[in-house]
Length: 328
Image (cartoon, rainbow, N blue to C red; front, side):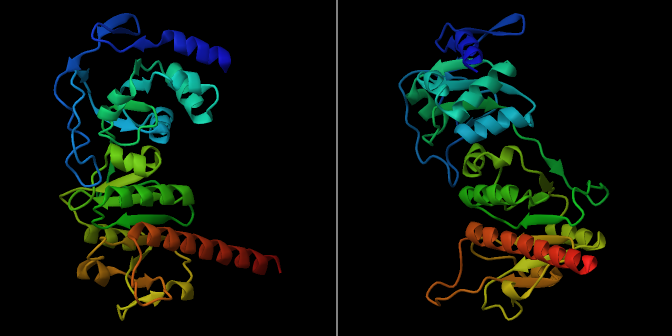
């Protein structure tokens, strides 16, 4: 590892106006732009202001991921078509040998022959939109994800599929936190619409601890709808499980049910929930019981974690009971 890091550090180029880097056999000029990059400003959950450094910044060819885990998982998953370059803080390479994730980033970047540039912390601050970059940013092409259509068959990745549909989740922090939990718990796919939904972004990737870079994501195009998707799910033999508060007369306490079929769990908008159309198509609507009436609901990302874990656990328990019955 020390030898690899030593070789890697020797190949790094300082990012100055006259910098050139080697890509294969050809030398390319690292271009600079006087304009402040716009990819991380102006949206909910993104930087609230632009802080000028008073000098030029490296030009960005795609979008900039920031933070250790988003950068590492983007490098390892190779889901991005192009990785244009990695920007690391000047002290980053010295810390690499003592920090597992930093060491792995350096090694993978070297193996993938990603152009690497050493910059000052304030440049990373600007590139990340004043977000916590942890000493590294990655210029990448936009993430391409699978688009759903009724005519397209999607591979079945498990014997008892468990999918998640995010209905009009707006906040990138909530969106990212849900992606992180869903990936951690092993859900098969996460589905979301093209309209009235949080867009995938570096902020979402950071909030997901990089899960956005590796999770199986499916997008419902503007030419279709979540209602059509749920009907398609029914035709595949699955059940649609909605979510609501205990005040809804249709809701059932999550503790009283056991999921034994392919399941599509719908999480509704932070403020308005699922809406009547989606609720009417659900086979069941579940809620999480609370103990204090002063607070009648949970943050959607917190509720998502509880619901996904409960459904996974109830399935596992039922499968264990079935196996014991068979043995007897």
